[in-house]
Image 1 (cartoon, rainbow, N blue to C red):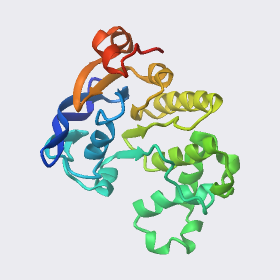
Image 2 (cartoon, rainbow, N blue to C red):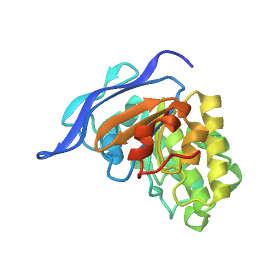
Image 3 (cartoon, rainbow, N blue to C red):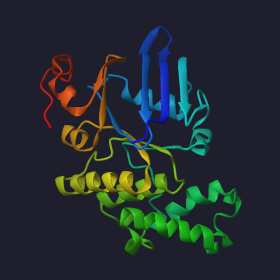
Image 4 (cartoon, rainbow, N blue to C red):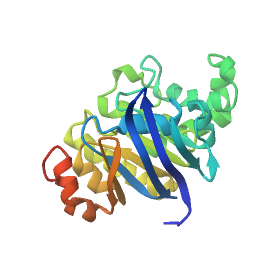
Length: 254
């Protein structure tokens, strides 16, 4: 792993009036590093993701992506800079086919969105990129299938393909295995590992399933009551008594 920081966050905070949801969070993630953010419900994980990905600007602190200050940029500009995000609730176009879903971010990227339902679907460059992205997630044979008719686990793969289509340097995965059965969860773990290895993409996940966290993360950050309680390698986090107590009052198991 390169020592170069692809994502750097300093003293990040966000408040609603006098209520501080997150406060003074600082962390750095190296290029190609697999990191995870964990914490009990209400710890501030979603607010943290929203503040760094452009859903709303943080009330304090700074965010750098690939050395560039992206603090407060709207989400579409953050995507342009190289950070893409998936959501806990599947965020796809169910009425479109699999490949049409992947066309969408590519069309927008190339400023061809006004021709969304025209000849743009015959664009060789876009079609080749869409199909290569589907190959990355194992959906080539389902390219022409309407997403609404797919199994839940495959819908999550479609969302992953949409995220990857823009060749992001950083991918934020919000509960990537939420709602999946054990087999689908194992397949997603394997896929994320494969994508990180083959593409060099930096993944930053938040996840409640500790098996997923300890299977994927090189480094884990623990959020508790809006503050960064601990950070370290999986073995360090597993042995941390403060983490064991804060994380729903029980020990963290792999």
